Structures are given as C-alpha cells and as structure tokens.
Length: 372
Image 1 (cartoon, rainbow, N blue to C red):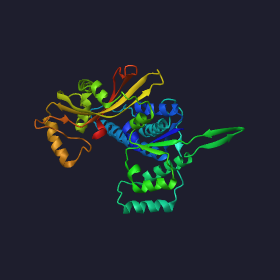
Image 2 (cartoon, one colour):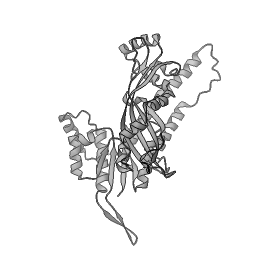
Image 3 (cartoon, helix red, strand yellow):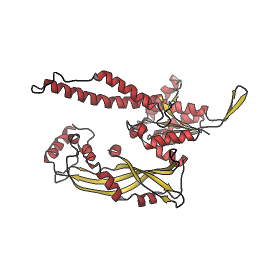
Image 4 (cartoon, rainbow, N blue to C red):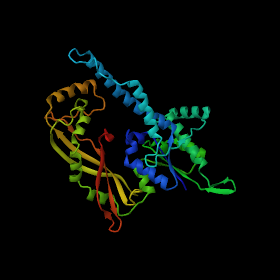
C-alpha cells in the first residue's frame, strides 16, 4: 500500500521559504520514499506559494532600488561608480530557482511528481459557487474546490487493487492512501466538500493538520515517548537558554522600527511562563540508523527590553495610523517594548529504546511568527 502525501499552501507557508531545509519536511520525504509512497505537488499550490515568495521578493527589491536611488541623489555621496545588479533579471532568476527547488525532493534530489488537474465541469463548478453562497460558507474558495477535486480524482484512481501487464509479467498494485495535509478545516467540515467526496466514492483520502501529526500516526510511535516525558526532559531553563542566543530577534516583531537594530536593545527581563507540547513523532534516521524524536512546543515567553521613549511615542501614532501592519506595538507603563506572544520551539534528539527514555536533546529552531 502506497502512502501519497500532498501539502496545502498553508503548510508550505509555515515551513517558510527555506522549506527544503526544514527537518519535518525532510523526514516526510524520507518516510514516504521508504514506505512505498511519495510526496506529490498540486499545481495550484505551486502557483500560490510561488506568488507568495514573489510578493516578498518584490518588497525586498523595491527597498533595494529605493535605497540605491536615494544614494545617487545624495550630494555628498560618491555614486558615479555605484554598481547595481540587473534587479529585474535577478528577480526572474530567483523566481525560477524557487520553483525548481519546490519541485525537487530535498533528500533524494529527484523531481517531485505534480498532481494533474482535473477537467472541471463548468456547470458543477457554478453549482458549487452558488451553493457556497447560499450556505454562507464565507471561507470557501474556488481554489479549495479545484485542489480538493484533483485530490479526490487521484484518490479514486488509486482506490482499488489492480493488475497491470508489463510484457509477460503481471504487476499487482494495491489500494493506496492519499493524505492531504492542511490547516484549513473546511476540507473535512464543509458540507459541500463532504458531498464532493461522496460523489467520487473515494474512501482512501485522509486529512491531517500537520506533517508532525502525519508522521506520529504513520511512523514509529513508541508508547514511552509522551507529552509528560517531553515536558520533564525539555525544561523551561533549557528553553530560555536557547531563546537567549537570539532573543533580540523578538524585538523586530514588536515594531518595524527595530528591524535593523533589534540586537542593540538590552533585555531587562526574560522568562518562560508556560510550555505546552503541541505534537511530536519518532523516526529512524536513514543516515545513521538511530531512532530519534522531533517535538513542537508552544512556549509562552515574557521578554521585556530597555526603555525606549521615542519608540513608545511613535507607537502611539502607529496605532492610530496603522503604518506598521503586522507589528505588535507592545509597550508597558514604563515605556519598555515587550514580547509576550506564544512561540513554536522545535527540539529533537536521540531515543533510548532499551531504557525507554530520551537519551539526548538538541535545539532545532523557533518560529516567532506562528501566532502573530
């Protein structure tokens, strides 16, 4: 039985633009390959995620061009020999490189197959749009319908055992399971999507909310690895120590004014108030044959920086004009910027099967933007 996996755009956004370096993503690709399966790509997801990167890159290049022009207009800065790259050319090259990276397996380096779009019946799509309006499903989008239809169509083709002739040989293919990983609850809860699934008769489709959830269910699952054991082993003191190595980065999420100097401000207070285990899984590393674990922790920090009266006054105006969209603009009564939003922390390490415990722990990364 093959395990096919498709990731929604929401999952790729969580992985970030360095998705191919993410440990969960690499483990997913490794696991499916080693269990007679593979990760597939939706062409719609490719376009959406590429456009997401394109918008981010456009913002960066515009900032670069503006800075270059400002320097050229400066009467005291020697800009006659100022060298600038062909931004438009490099922009196009970066987009192509991004798309290519998206379609390459990060472990085996082979091309990832793309799920073919189905020929949507115009009348059925029109009915779906009208019914979604009538049912007041405001979160339903046409792109969701198109992705879901292509997934169900592929799943239906893989829903039964079949025998394929190859010369004189007969090759038997068993029923496959297709897992769609998405943060969008609509694929399971929406009435219209449920009906579409029933129409296809595809009972081999599963929906998971994260890569970690999928690997926890499908991979190694030692009973002794529990949330309680992880909380016991990964202590608050350890988390705070790992956060302290890059604690200035949190300040850049407080306000855009700290983007270039977030490490200059002193930290007056830092503590971890609470830790929750979100999800975890164990796996066998193909490189060294050792059993390991990955855990995602929801960490609630309380980090307060030194007084910034100028920043505090600017934040009052920012909150009125909404200049810095997406920034917290959080200051206490003493005019000190602070960060108290939950953060995702990722830890991994070795598992001792004989003693049924965790042998070692290593910090992997933390993601401040997840809950902002």
